[in-house]
Length: 478
Ligand code: NAD
Image (cartoon, rainbow, N blue to C red; front, top):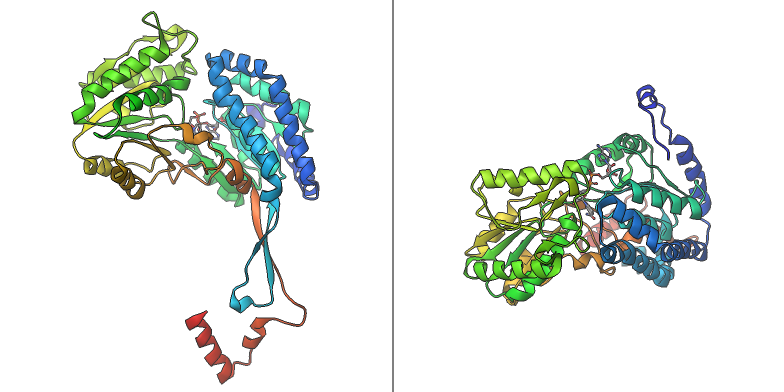
């Protein structure tokens, strides 16, 4: 484990320069590697993962008691699917793409070449600590890069497992894991990487972007925020309740694309909340108690305290708990909780909740909800439950969002043919599948001209009357 001491930080010695320099020279060599070489590396990760699923399950259980099935669904499968998708399509993605020549470029042949960006930094959060570190690694390798990975310090068992995996599969000058607290991240961010892929909070996203600007490093920022759900009066209430119960409360609500708060039409509010309670009991309870095996825990005491205080603040200010509300500090357990009658000043509506508390807000007209959402930062995800195509059309057209699901939530994350990412406050850039490959590639245009010929020669000076006329015609028609 490479952790920087405070003394080193004070005197300004960056302990990661050496490995960074080694990766820089290696990345130059990787440019001439074949696609077969890249595929071989991806297959190595796939094989390791399939042979070590028990270790992944164990690490995530130690970190925050993530249920085994959730580990397979949300930490392992998205990575193996991403690898297989890349293996099937890499030859297409990496092939130079020919583009047609406009009339002014007559005689030229042009292609877009996708070259590796070079040496990349991947910084990951704790909530899906394996998947959100290894999935971007897969994309970086598919695109021919070297990478330094900085997993989250809040999930140390998973971070160690990733370090072990990388140590087994790669030389340090190709892929290296750096563990450590925020200071390690800060030190890494001073280095002139060719690309930084950061997943985490908008607040830290700003720090990352500022650091990247010092070296003019490109960034992909996969951030979070408050993702709203709208259940309108035409929705199939039972279907919506089942899907929302699952998508909000898996991973104990600690999911970047989890429904954050929910607007429900006042005419179906009671029916919907009853269905939601029923769905919660069916999925996450056993004999009237929260399931020990099918429901996770809050990652650490700080987040447990933060969420408990959010609930207390809500109740103190006149909010009402519709379901749940119980907490057990020693287990870091917070029951799936539904709240309503939120005061306008409630902290629950001011920050990303990132936990198993779902505020339910009744509304009377879609206009009112659209206005409310427009006043908030653009969300990472937006969910609409409805049978009305015209209502969904309005939501899609009028509301900006990183991604939208109609009649489902969260599942778009694993659809690798869709670009995944936020917009402004919820993120910059896209990833997954081809879009992830693009994030780690430079799209380099190459134009080939004929020797002794160029259309532009017609406009070389001295600028006589004919050229002057020609330029006007070109400006008007071409
Ligand atoms: P975080 O921003 O606190 O930390 C993420 C990473 O940044 C960690 O590795 C951490 O060590 C590092 N970091 C923290 N503070 C730093 C600083 N001051 N300087 C440099 N590096 C620093 O996020 P988190 O708490 O680990 O994760 C939760 C957040 O991530 C939520 O906002 C969630 O919505 C978001 N998220 C987004 C996605 C997505 O794909 N868009 C996925 C998961 C989580």
